[in-house]
Amino acid sequence: MRSEAFESILLYLVGARTKRRTVHLTEARQLRALAHPLRLKLLGLLRTDGPATATTLAERVGQSVPLASYHLRQLAANGFVDEAGELARDARERWWRARHQITSWDVGEFLDSPERLAAGQALSAEVARRYAEVLQSWVAEMPTLPRDWIGMWELSDRRLELAPDELVKLRSALATVIERFVDRPRRDDTEPVIAVVELLPIPRPAS
Image: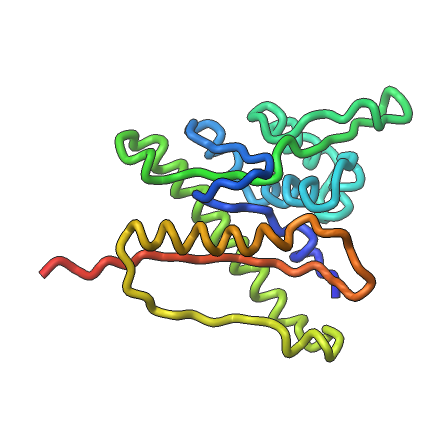
């Protein structure tokens, strides 16, 4: 199973910090630039599959080359991608590569700026929509998985009682565990696995 929905999943680790190349967004302009479904897909493909031309990316996302080229230029203008000119075989060919592996932002840093707060919420909403889309596509295509993989998936939730400092520790611990499995050499028996972590504080209403 290799649906287009899974090929373009974006590699995000919101809030946490790792040793991998991370860009931390603080400007409304960058937040707004990334809060676009096609740009998220293009950036996700460059991060997961490496450098590519606008033509190749357009085919992968089912859009026209001019449209893909426009959004790649917008990503470049906001510091998310660079041209990879050394890969071009002639003057007409333009290659692109992702500048970072991970994007992070903290909406809590934007509370004093309505403009940045709105931009941060818009980007968070688009990423949440993207995650939901990927999950729905996976459930639909689950029966096509090899039998050995079908029983290995996990989709569950737990209600925890945590203080803010404990939530930070939990987030850090989960990130550490996941990072141990990142960038390992591929084996004959491995397949890509998407790990999406959701830790959502839900304060009780004030009495």
